[in-house]
Every structure is written in C-alpha cells, then in structure tokens.
Image (cartoon, rainbow, N blue to C red; front, side, top):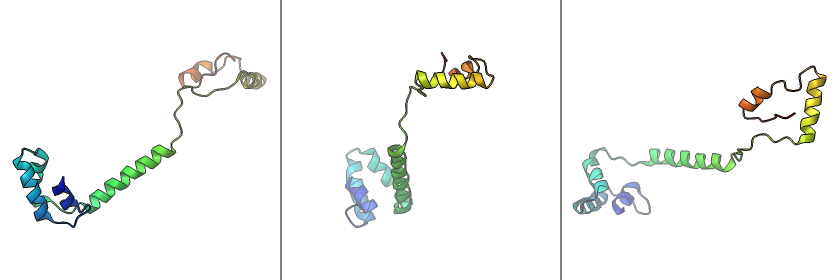
Length: 114
C-alpha cells in the first residue's frame, strides 16, 4: 500500500524508486499485487489524468443516484373517483367502457375495473 501511495502521490511526493522498493519488499512476502507493479514498472506513468477521469465519473454516478426519482413498483395510482370521471369522459368521447384496458395492463399502468 505504501508503494502505491508513493506512485500515486497520495499524501507523499511522487517517488517511483521508493514505490518499487516497497513493492519489492511486499512481493518477496508473496503479494501478487506488488508483483504486478514490479513486472510492469516500465509502463507506469503518473495516473493523474486517468485517475481524475475515474473520480469524475464515479462522483457523477453518485450525483445521478442521489437525484434519481424513487422507483415505485406500484405503478400509476388513480383513486376510484378520478377513475370514474376518466371513464365517463371516455364514454362521452365514444369509447367503449372497457376500451384499451388490455393494452394498459400490459404496459404497466393498471387502470382496469373502470
């Protein structure tokens, strides 16, 4: 973990040599994560851009989650007085009393029994 801190400049100044020293000590004790860093040390670059983009996307996802509308499994709730008025308007417009009930039940809106 200390090697990663030196590599990513978190709380300490960037020092790749010091990071590799700590990775070597940890890899000698069998740490596969540290061994990976040692094997790929020629490809290591300061991860500032990628790390910043990852943090940005993570925080954006949290904002979307926090501001999302609550999910309701109940669907659309219409009280019986409103349901009766809607049915009367539909009949006045020439619809049959049970017109479109089957389509509405399949689409998640349950307005049957009008």
